[in-house]
Length: 454
Image (cartoon, rainbow, N blue to C red; front, side, top):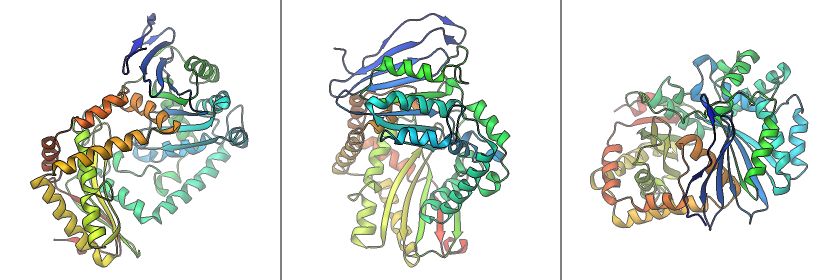
């Protein structure tokens, strides 16, 4: 048996930028997990699978390296708009046929858009995987975008935007991103706004679709009781003759990391609303996705505000009862990142919550964390990762993100070793850097900006 983490490759003749026939590699064979294989089709489309014979289900996903940050200002919301439209019908199937085909076998389908990628996925019984592959590949590759459907979904998306505006606990995170990134696409709403979605034409969306949804930008991932060769064959059949069946090309490299995204000077942004709770995010620019300090950041985040035993939760909720929800988080992109602390509390308590939060950030920056906290933070990181692999959907996502965002799939044992290798000095050095950066503040609640002026 091949040792875990071993990588094999088949050889193939090449022509121009792409292979003339499929190239398959075994990425890992884990006796405790499944066999992971990767095939690159001549078009540049990539197929990754993890075979887990003990499962009776399969999760199948199509991941496109296109998100809201790839839009121009007038296009804001196009990626999300397109995600909605692809379920509305193809040249082979109408919207009802798409949904009923999967639901008739007890499966489920869905999709989501992020700032850097879009995912369409289905989860079905293993015996129904051929159906899922055919339906999902069809809708991603060959949707018709009927004008009537564009207008229908425009109304749905405008309602979604309005609903989001009524959720201050969600809105404050978007406000924080805008405070840090300003007009950069990373600072915009994934959904776009009413001002950008309302005038967006079918032609604009169609152009975005055909320019962005190309084979080299797409990763197909599947995990569960499957056979890799069969999945590749079914994918090739499903896209044959479609816009994804193109001339040989090399897969697109993962998103470049230079030049780094410029962030704004620290500021306070307040959205005045008559809410029962104040929602605040205090934070700063963080580190990017490939920064070697990301493992130390995971440990630091767990200690500061990553769970019920974290410092912020214990101080603000358990000991003082000032907030129901308080936590810290990190968002990482190809060339930038965010680090923030969220709290939801009564408006009369917001000043005290912010004072305690700033004091805890300063305390960790100056004195660091303890050995006991280091051990606990590592345990939380490892446990969350391993327990998150208990279902086929999580395993499918791991395959796709490894390929799409990192350009490689780090074996489970290697990732756990990287967490174990984090030292107290690494965490404390990162804390001294990160937590002393100028902090931006985003607030949604019954306040004016003057309330938070020093």
